[in-house]
Image (cartoon, rainbow, N blue to C red; front, side, top):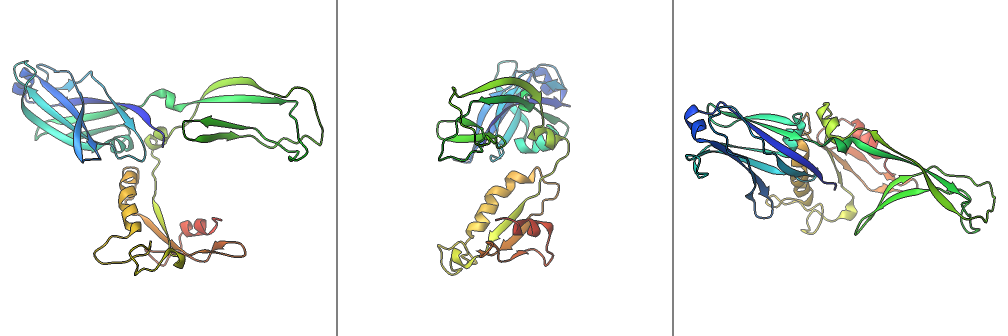
Length: 295
């Protein structure tokens, strides 16, 4: 899953004058999932004698769609410019996905009178794309290979090779060439395109549908090792997966209801699903129709 570098900036409003006089500072914490504790990742500068403060310090964040990235922001009153916190004005909890889904900014109550505004800055280069044009010269076709060929563009990492692009088929019409083979880069152009962040900011909503394989080959519902194991005091594997994945989508969903489908095994001769049905109603939705088309 790709990671994106973002920046978080803060603005505090309506701080009490007596607290603003001695100075206020904000501390940003991130939830560490391994031990479920919040770890400090940044502090702002101290602002003096300002009841409405826009902090200049920006906190770098790493965003991944498959991570909730829970945040806690605490605002403190500083004691007489010494840098020591005298007391906490208030604190808020949120996550990066919620801020992005709200158009990259959100306002939250900090205390009975004060509020805090959170802003996410997304670098513009995430909408940049490189358009490459290649040309193959004297591509050799061996007897044991098909005459039609194509070019692929891959990205190699430490552990994986990722296919980025596959060209159309090129027909050599049976010709054999013996000149030196080459693949030349004819042009490279930086173009502007869409991004996930732009789509969400423009109002795109996601909908989550869970499809459960009810094939008998997945095991007996009475056996603890089975995917279909059912017990009143034990959560099933399906339930555990839904609990783990659903919170990642909720911020981007206009409707928090989750679609649930059941389907049977693929059967010959066309290896289509033997059945597909909605688990939450008797209505066969378009999601069922789509799932039936999966080979």
